[in-house]
Image 1 (cartoon, rainbow, N blue to C red):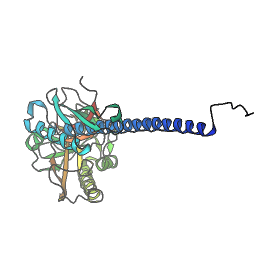
Image 2: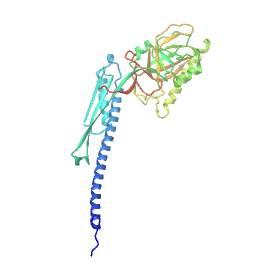
Image 3: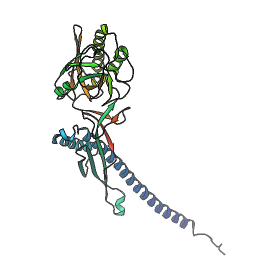
Image 4: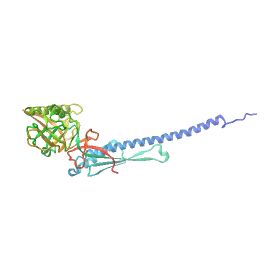
Length: 351
């Protein structure tokens, strides 16, 4: 009499069932892994597309250099071309790219579409997916910055030389002379009364640590006695200007004064300075107050002495961009005077 068998069948049958189950599980596992791979690729594409839109919008905003009242179509055309160039450089074979402008051409919006061909989703009938991302950037006028050099030129010189022609200015003798066109004046930008020449000298070399703003009251109070202060300030200006020129000649700028063409200088080049513009004023025989009418960016071409006089040759730059994370940066409003200083930043989208 044969023994009665219990279970799911013979050993061979059980092994066959296990193999079938394993094969089906493997197919499902590979399918899930494949779908996950397609999804991961699609997610990475979306991230890359967003980065491309961000960079393109920032590049476009960087070229919106003028206010609506004195701008022209060239700014918008240049901004559009640069946004397209950057987007296509960041992301190949874009399906579509749209660059639009808003708010009197102070905002640039970049929207792009990208199509991804699938691998494993094809088994579900999904051959491809289209992704859309967008970003909006703004070129806002700067109303205040840290790191300005405590120097001022007259509004007359600004108006006459803002087109970029070289301007040579002579160091005025603080508290002893009138502040006239053709002069550069040493300023105290904080509440320190009678600032020591050594303190002022350090600020000319490296910039003022506090924020200097449009509309701020300045004084020409630098602590040097009347008889000697002209000589002391002349020497300080020449030495400090030379210090900037020497630093610019070193790496990474390697700026010997002939490497770059106007106005395409590196923004962190030590020869590039932010200074003030204020009204001319007649001699007051003492401390006098001045109002910062503008903040401007200039390129220091040269500094030299003739006898007891010190001179700087500068060019007023048409624009300079600041990072939105710059400490002490003050973004101006609609009424802020535009002297070419901008902060380029991404903002919340318009829709």
